[in-house]
Length: 138
Picture 1: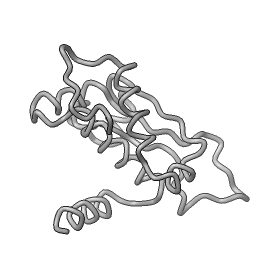
Picture 2 (picture 1 turned 180 degrees about the vertical axis):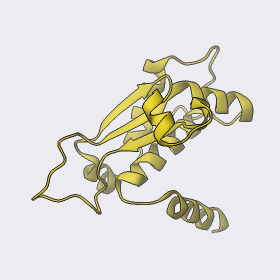
Picture 3 (picture 1 turned 90 degrees about the vertical axis):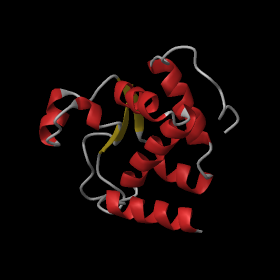
Picture 4 (picture 1 turned 30 degrees about the vertical axis):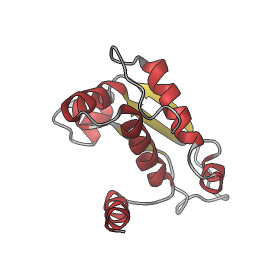
C-alpha cells in the first residue's frame, strides 16, 4: 500500500477508516475484486446489539469486522437473496486492537477487510487461518 507507514496523530474517524479500506480494496487482485460486485461496505462504530447477541459476544470490542450475506458457494439464481451482501468494519474495536498491539493501522484494516471478503467466497475462519499459516511458513 502506498501509505502503509502513515502515522496518525489521533484516532481516525469513520471516513478515514473507510478511505483506508477503499485503498486496501483496490490492492486486492482484480480477479477477486470482480467477484465482490454488489457487496456494500460500511464502517460502523460497533456491532449492534442483535449481532452481539447472535454471535454471543461478551463485549462489542470482540468483533472488528463482519460479513453478512449469502456466500458465493451458496448463491442461487433461482433463489436470490432479498438483502445485499455487506461487509462491516467496526471502527472502535479496530482502533482498540491497534492501540493494544501497535500493529500498522493500514495493515490491520486491510487484514480485517480481506478476512470478511474471504467469508463472501465461502471460506471459514479455520480456512483463512490455515491459508495465513501456509503463507507465513513459505
